[in-house]
Length: 66
Image (cartoon, rainbow, N blue to C red; front, top):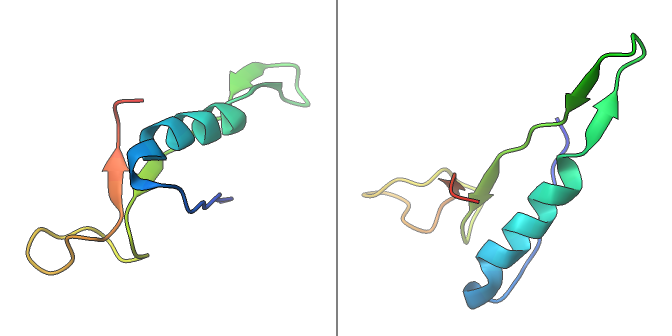
């Protein structure tokens, strides 16, 4: 898996996430000629840990509404 990380102002994270997601999700053609689109997931947080409501509220939380 590849990944991209960025530090952005809090009020711009959705815009940055959408731009980064669109850069990854390109239309491609496999060596067998079949067309496909690369898929990606987006998570936002203030640290690398997984989001947990009780133990890590600043952790990475998946964003699905882009």
